Image (tube, rainbow, N blue to C red; front, side, top):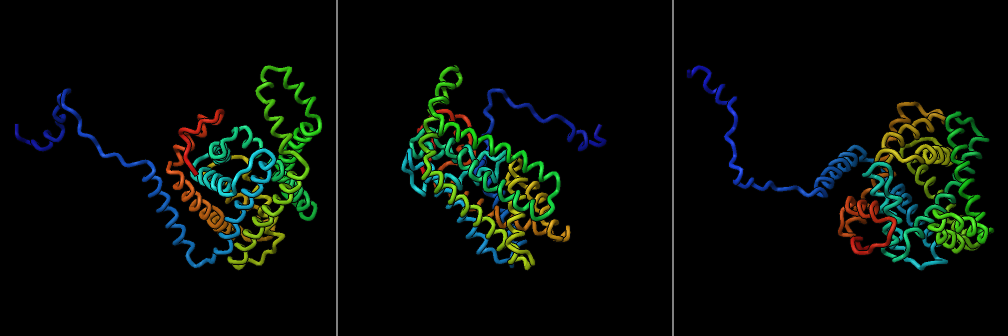
Amino acid sequence: MKQNGCYHEFLEAPPRMNPTQAKPARPRVPRWLVMLVTWAISIGSLVWALYGYDFSQIVLLELAVYVVQGWRWLTLLRPIERMGLWETVHAIYIGLFASGVLPLRPGEIIRGYLLAIWGKIPISLTLTSMAIERVLDGIWLVAAFWVSASLMNMPRAWVYSARVLAVGVAALAALFVYILFHKHHAHSVLSSRAWGRKFIHVLDQIHQMGNRRTLTEAFAITFIYWILQILAVWALFLSYDMDLSIWAASVVLIIKSIGTVIPSAPANLGVFQSVVKMSLTLFNVEPNVALELSVLMWAALTLPLLIVGFIAVLFTGRSIMEIHHHASTHHARLDPQPAPEP
């Protein structure tokens, strides 16, 4: 019957393919190209939306922050291994890019892995130095928060969060001090346990890095590290014509840093904006303006790091997914074969 012939032909099953007939190969688009195009569109859209703002000072200050961090990392490693500023800063920017495009902030492990490969040093050494970095950051951050809380009313939730952070920082600091001044006792405690013998070399590394001169220099550099971040936030306020002082910039940065301690979405998207918006309301900024400024602050402090970090990844000749894979699977051993060169 010819009625509705086209309709029935459309419903007919397609002809079966001979099992022996080879399927035509489909062209595959490289994953790195997809990621590059996606980020190029996103960054291009944000640049167009933010056109007209002068971000030059903010960008320079924010980029300088992580050069100072590389300097601090060099200082901590100096008693054990002589590294170059290029290696530490390069690893840091790749880590920042990884944390900006991947969830749960994997950039910390990645930068430690890369420096271990490039410097041909144990990854336990780089991770231990990074732990000391975080203790130094925590000391300055907690101290600054309690000074701020003594001068203005802070929401109870933030006070509780700061207390939890203070306990964690105090515990790590006490552990490091104990190892520094009671090395032999710490050795005997770990040696008496099967699992503890694996970490004896970490005690030696902490003791080598923990001399008074190194820690004093690193502590002073950490102060510069935080001051530059405060100046970047204040420069953003000035570019937005906000009548907010450097004191307000300090408080916003402190609350933002505490609020984003726990790893979350790539580049802390969402968490960053909500924390900054809440902190700005402490200075009587209208909610709509605070939200707009939080988005602007995220873009100004994040996009330059993503761009420079992407360039840093290109220098390795590998994709960030490849680097992340090697850092995740080989972080327990030094394996220079698959690692990218700086």
